[in-house]
Amino acid sequence: MDLENLKSNFNSAAEAPISKEALLKMLNVNQHPSVKAIRIQLMIESIFWMAFLACFYNFFDGHLKPAIWNIALALAVGLLLVHNSAGHKITNNPINGTNIAESLTNYCHRLKKYAYISIASRALAISIMFGYFLSGLESFEQRHYISIGIGGIVITIQVVALWRIWSKRISTITSRYEQIVMKE
Image 1 (cartoon, rainbow, N blue to C red):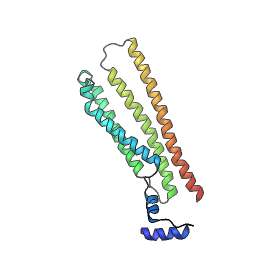
Image 2: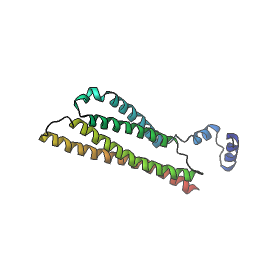
Image 3: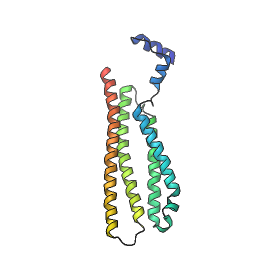
Image 4: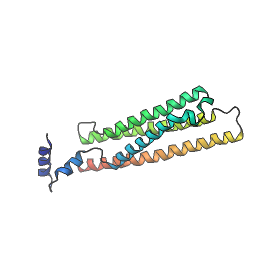
C-alpha cells in the first residue's frame, strides 16, 4: 500500500484530515524521546569507551600490570562496545511483529532483557577496572581495602542508578503501549 492510499484511508476514518507530513512523522519509529535518549547514551558511551581502550595501556601503566588484567580490561571494554552496538540495533528496530500491539510487546520484552544485560555488563566492566587499577600492588594496606570498599559502593550506586534509569524508560514506553492498546 503506498502512502497516498494510506493517507486517504486514514483521512476517511479520522474526524479531521491529517497532512502528509504528519503521516510521515507517525511512520518514523525512532521519534520517541526515550528511544532518542537511549541512542544518544549508547553513542556517547561508545566514543568514551573507544577512547579509553585506545589509551589505557600508555596512560595507566599497562606494561607494569599483569598481562591477564590487560587482556581482561580490553575484553571488558570490547564487550561493552559490542553491547552498545547491539543496544543501538534494538532501539533502531522496534517493529518486530504482525501488528502494532505485537511489535510493542516484543519491543518491551527485548528492551527489558537488554536492560538487565546492560546493568550486569557495566557492573562487571567497572569491577574489572577496579581490579586492573589494584592489580599492580605488591601488598595490600588498609587504604587498599578502603579502596575496594569504595569500589563496591560505587558499583552498587551505579547498579541502582542504572536500574532507575532503565525502569523509567521502560515504564514510559510501556505506558504508551497501554494507551495504544486501550484505544483499540
